[in-house]
Length: 242
Image (tube, rainbow, N blue to C red; front, side):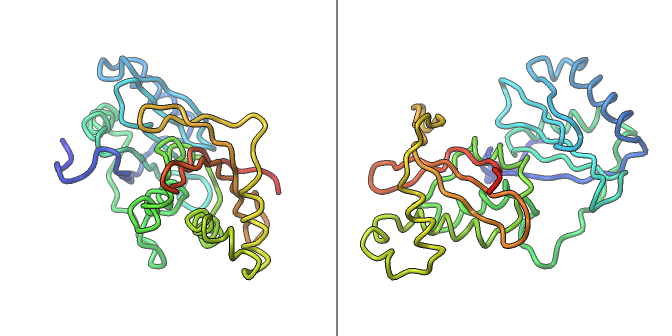
């Protein structure tokens, strides 16, 4: 089944299932499919269930994330997160897993208009007006699938600061202490900056900005570069101790 042509191939999609398998048995079955089916000849399986198993591949639009939930959801629930351009491969995965998966309608969170998780948050940023000034690279969205950071308000504040860097150069002293701290932090340069591929070119992510959670937890660190015409590219995201 192909996604509608109106959906961009990078659009994040999620499907929810129930499985009769326990984690070790499901992992074994998933491994058999990925390593044995011709459709996955150019794919590979990585990751443990605590973080979510990833199916990567040279002919895929993005990684296919397979999670068996243990904490907030039933141990029997599976979610598959993927890009719209990989719908055909995901449909084949579901077919091959057969009785290991029974479709389930996801229960929406009434407080959110999108699925939870930083990957969907970053995708939302790319689709709203802020995304015209602050671009979230696909690599950062892929990395965000493994992040547990949930303080979206703090993350949004840091991204808003990146979108106002030029204006803040003259006005940051009149901002709150939080904005002043994060603005000054964003001016520092990496000694060994990570690299991101953007529009076919390697870009050095020389700067970083943190989003600090309001409650206990790890800090979201976003690595970014300044592009021409004042735009910002967030090319990588990770969680670090504060």
